[in-house]
Image 1 (cartoon, rainbow, N blue to C red):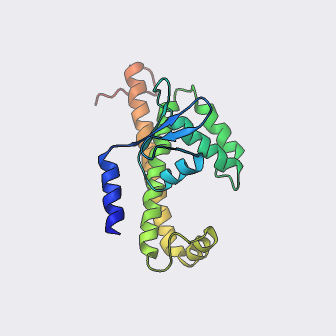
Image 2 (tube, rainbow, N blue to C red):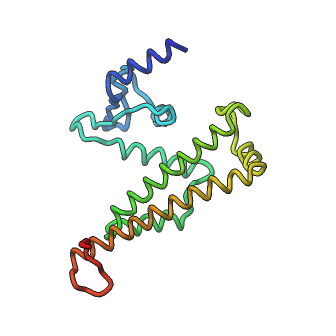
Image 3 (cartoon, rainbow, N blue to C red):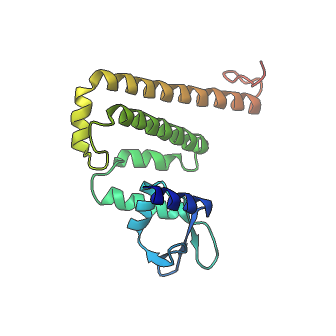
Length: 190
């Protein structure tokens, strides 16, 4: 255990792991000096390992592109997380004035959900082996934890609502600064 902590500590001391993407679509791990697959990159994500993907020739940063490839594989290879309607709604935000705000909103909501999941895991710790706990087992656990779940989900939904209201207020202030004196818009000055 101590050896694995030392190895993880040494890896973080070196900075993010650099993966080079070659024109033949192969990924090369510069730390391990070997070619890797998208499945290996997915494992790095699951292990919370910091990495960057760079084009082997130009040095251009390609991490987002690789992460999107992993999401595409996950979405097409099993039970999708996003419905077609949700994906269409996300696409509609590209080029829209709200694009930047939506990205921030989704990111903060995702973080709130991760925090909720961590709290739930902490409460259930000791009842199961987290690595072998299946979605079905989660469903059974949660059905027996209805009051607890209602409280946690209520907190999550409240955080989400507050975040959305803050975004609306910020937009209102920005619009007021851009269009002073127009009805319906308040300036940021009070």
